[in-house]
Length: 155
Image (cartoon, rainbow, N blue to C red; front, side):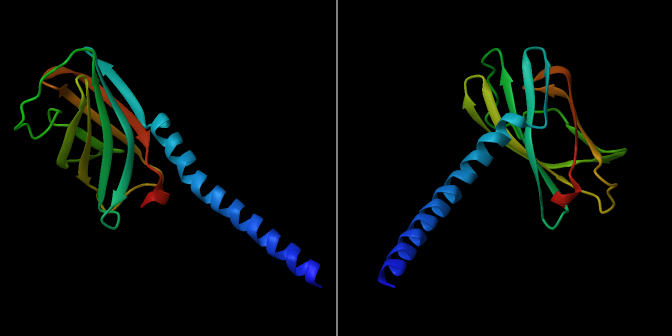
């Protein structure tokens, strides 16, 4: 009977260790995969806009789009600028959604990361297509359009 208890204790220790190992490594694998996938990119005039991902917040009423802007040259941005993009348009199928806010920060000489928040409408079709478009980034005119599908499970 003593040997059974001794082996049971060892088995529990090994099982606990494996659970901890899997638990700690799983979030690292998930976060390593999502930035590489992204929602899409568009490039014009040496400026690349990438939508990295989105989150639905405020009980499904608001969407946050995380983006990265990369430029081939070092473009200075006015410190008082409220946005890096000239009036971005966000479409869910055929409904225009206006942005509420844009926050950003400079990551390197040629790269900015930011988040745009927009108000979502109550009615949304099943797995709707979303289109993000802007005609100006970093005071440069151009055309950047990215299209992706919203997952209804997120809201």
